[in-house]
Image (cartoon, rainbow, N blue to C red; front, side):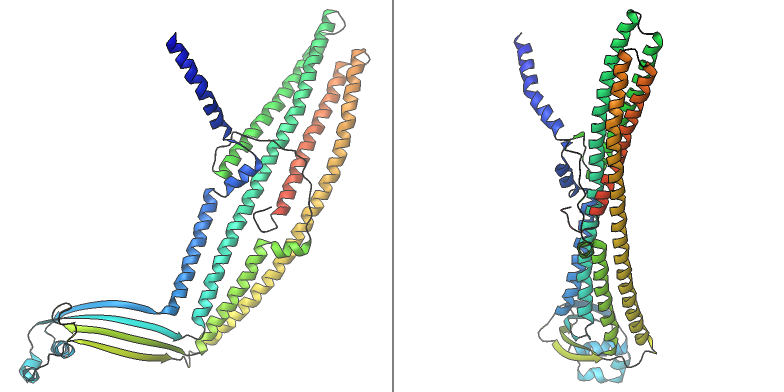
Length: 439
């Protein structure tokens, strides 16, 4: 008996834990939107941005020049090389000048160790232009991440509200089913009393079967939507926390759309990149100046007698392309045409975005009109259906008439759900025209 009590006690203690674990998969809309930021695709886009930052830092590093350590080792009996080794090692002796020793020297090893520092002093603006390009590529990577996030938000909202509408329709169909079951009980009683026929019962059973089929389809649609939400968020979703399904369309001015649209921002940054590319092409007409400094030592042994055999070199270099057969000119003209093309692309994109916004506004307006008409139709058909139910009770209408008008009422309910889904999709699509995570 004591063992049984212990088992029951442990079971009771574990029940809240199980419930809590299950509740973790029941999400509100805000929960789902928070999970999006942790999805694999968003993390991948963040990696892309980080790689762009590394590219920028790499380009920026060119301003500081480069310092390299180089060690070379060589063994040879080449007469010129052997004499040069001795000369670099400051070990040339008078006997080394004898013809026999010069022409047929013994094998010799030599090691050179040196530090070389080079610094570009002026590149005609090329390095600055490359830095601007890589900096703008970071901005584009950030906008790409936001764009992906906005698309994910669109899909999540669309999936979430489709479930809300499914549940709303399911609740209404269940009420119809309950009333139909009550009607069946009444008909069954009337049959016993001789006021109804077997055919009436068969017609009601057929309708109940149709209603169950609708409910089954709605359940399947909900499961599919939950699977899709799980895929989008990379998190298992068992159900959602329901909210009101009535979403209102909030219009936004064209100027704000043009200012906040991500694709237009990217197109504007692309123009800045094209300007930097013109600067790069222009730099071919300007000189390149640089500084080089070197310190090293040569010896028969690696790093041997370093201070005795060390040396230094300081150098200054200039390079100026005076003629390239028209190649530099063509590159510059091409860059300028590319800039004009990008500006035209931006203007065309603005027209396309505004056309898309107007198209969505028109669709939402039409859907609102259709929903208003369907809601009136729903009200009237429900009343007609109820009137026929009352008439049937008074044996002034057949069961067939009742079920026909019930079917029309159900059809209107399903039309409303479809229209709301279309309307919400257009509203969410309109919101994707804006930048930012707070949509």
